[in-house]
Amino acid sequence: MARPKDPAVRTQLIERAAAMLRAREPITLRSLVAGTGVSTMAVYTHFGGMDGLWQGLRQEGFTRLGARLTTVPVSDDPVRDLTALAAAYLDNALTHPDLYRVMFDASVDLEDLPAADATLEHLVQAARRGRDVGRFRTDVVPLDLAIQSWAIGHGLVSLVATGPLPRETLDHGPLLLRALFTACGDDPDRCRGSVEQGWHRPAPDDERSHQA
Image 1 (cartoon, one colour):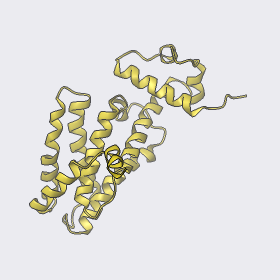
Image 2 (cartoon, rainbow, N blue to C red):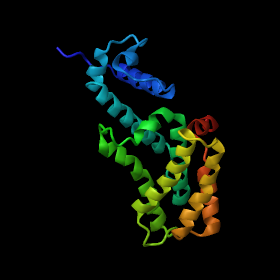
Image 3 (cartoon, rainbow, N blue to C red):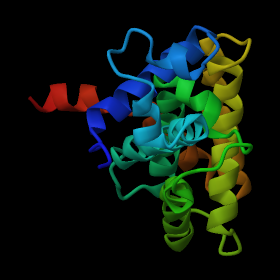
């Protein structure tokens, strides 16, 4: 009889692997379970082996990104929202830098590709609303603008979370986003206000504390 899967054990192994990545420790079947209280069989039970573990790590990165993007509320200002989504992307990468390192490793298959693709859809919808309300030109393709916004966030945070530059490098984000949005037709002054509001939107924990 196959052993039942315990979600807590799966999460424990994911967190253990992430911690080993952070410490730059080699991840083997035995080193992964060392000190966890679970056997090597748990890796096969939950992931089918080490290849499955790497798939799980990559998928978990997108799962947490999707959860973080979902916390960004939809407002009546799509440019602010698009900026807030970019800022949330950075926040997620800095919060989970170990998972971020493996999210875009195309040599490892994803367990659920549509679920990973869905993270981009948050930005696509904000870009589409921006076009529909006249903030962007009618010829702007929402998917293209979403990818361009994502690329700005990804480029910046890659240089900080997994690269050589200091956190202050992220301060270039608003300038880059304003340049992109105004190139797509947004009014410069209005764009500045929207980007400033979106970029400095409180994190979810801060929002909850203010509402208490």
